[in-house]
Length: 376
Image (tube, rainbow, N blue to C red):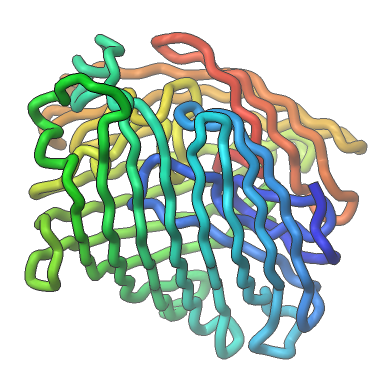
């Protein structure tokens, strides 16, 4: 794992040894765009090459390769730079994808403009909708092809607070991977679907570090309004809100990280747009992506992170999630517990970016995770 130059840093599940910049590893949730963070102290233009191995609970072991550059629209080195990349991934179950991403910071970080274009062909198992379907564990193997474009423009409206509009366009189709009748509720979701949605996004970030935060918090809100008035073949809405908080228990050697997340879908949402445990941003480890999905999802997680003076660290985490057909039915839904242990290996001496190996347990068994950067 290497990057072609020095000095950037990443946030979500991505990359490299010298110059990490971050893009989330592939998710089976097509409504989730990648998160990108870069660091201070990069040169005007810094080339990037980032091979990112990962282990996904649905599409298996894979490799994502990103090529691009960290660059600046502002000359002030105290301002985090912009990042542009192209790349792709391939997994051992023959899922693959291509993408181009730009995350620009303009006018001394007053504006944050992000864009992404992608084609993906992913193979995964659909377990049905609702808590009972997840408990039964019976799945239909499907293949989903997606072409989509995302864009957002967030303006700083107060210190550490950004908000602004977003838009997405998507064409997708789902096919059965072998001959068997699909579940009744998914039959309308198999033909090709065209979707268009405006949206609103906001974020608040006071973390002291993107890689290994020891203080502060980060909160994000995203909403999409898919509408036939703009050419969409389905009318539905999708919402996501998440908050992470960090505090030191014993200096920087022992840190407590917590996360709360809620997602929801209303209207005529296809099955693959419904929130699911284990998928998307702030996913709960210990459950196969998509096994438990419904119109409402909540998760709560806590993780103790320990690190010595060298490159090795360890974590212990616990959490739970719930899915329900509505907010009113959440109190009666089953609580899905999860927990586990992890090892960390610091990839660079300059930045606390880690290779992450987690072994997690959930209600239905144990799962292994391998990626770069922290879960939240």
